[in-house]
Length: 520
Ligand code: KIV
Ligand code: ZN
Image (cartoon, rainbow, N blue to C red):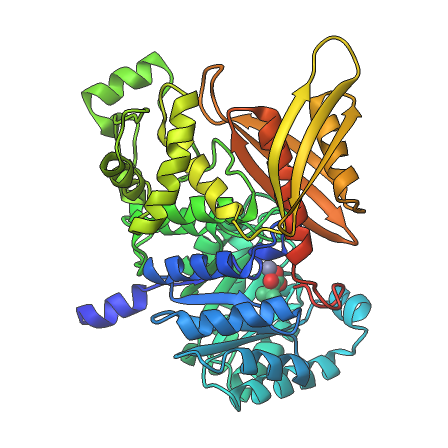
């Protein structure tokens, strides 16, 4: 075997579904501009396929897939479709401008799903597989097919379904562990079984799509690769339905760090991982768990004396990868109110935010305001500042203009609030059980709405009593869930802005049609 053939055999394609499966996480709705920004970064970091959305699900999804298809230059852009002709035509329409469009069509194949969800006989499902893949092939020769709930599908039927898809022209066969039920041995056995039994399987790419309900998504995906899968479907920060999908950063770094026992290559520039993680966290309002592998705040922190001592002697004692491999740089530069534009620009660039002169002008004003209130501005403060800039825009429908609260041991607490609604200022004073409650009541008095607060969460960005607080709120209205986020050294101001951020998102959210059937 020559080297080229070997490296081709060892190449694992990275299929990112942050914008599709990831966005299906309740509350993870992203705006069009956020999706475009994420897609461009995924393309830059070398993702092979970007699943940009589910075009039939909503106008918003259609628009996102169309725009991303138009803008992305290197990756294949993919749109999801159920097996119906309408879904496939809509996906093809959204992908029209893509250089390398992929249609991903799926149908359930497990006994449980066929009987209760689809209410279809197995033979009718096979016919739908044939018809959907053939229809997709009329639009592109890059067609992916998935048997939903694949890992709970009877093997004989799975083989027949996969064979049908291949005969109809599928070029990638993706095996989803839809409910996160499988385990590494079984995940590998299914891939091996398909490779042994299905005619034509060697002509297609086998893919794996693992959910994390039992915390085994990454292990299951890697086991599938060891058994012959050559595409991993994954998401940044492991975002996705319920407990999420296999995390891109984990599968990629596992294959890189343990290349001795996982001898596979990807095309990912791993130094972009941290930037992608922050961007997705900001866009969705989903904070990254502190001890999350690879991208968690503590992933490279060493607290115990023994570990610190070892690290000082040789970083290899307790670090299996270097922070810079994922785009984290070791830096001692702390900014303050005397720091100038050049220092701010350099620091933001280091954190993954290269800014144009105009953007820098804007951010510099906000940085100075913050530095006036806080002696030292740490990396985390700047990240919160950038996240705030990304989530609040000058053209937002609702904006907090002024807030003063009276609080303390004597009730009632009250909030005096000026809110700009569509460019016009409105003022009210409201009372509540504590300053945050009073503030939210004031917002409600000025902007009556039916949205219900599901979650209110505060965390300190850094240490010390002058630390900024990041507030996240999750709100639900008519079955739609959004997350709002804001940071400020004043927790009540951050709360007001986060609440208003969520209301702005609800206002512009993309309405999903047929939510029962249009989720995957
Ligand atoms: O989990 C799942 O089954 C899916 C498919 C659409 C691939 O997301
Ligand atoms: Zn999924």
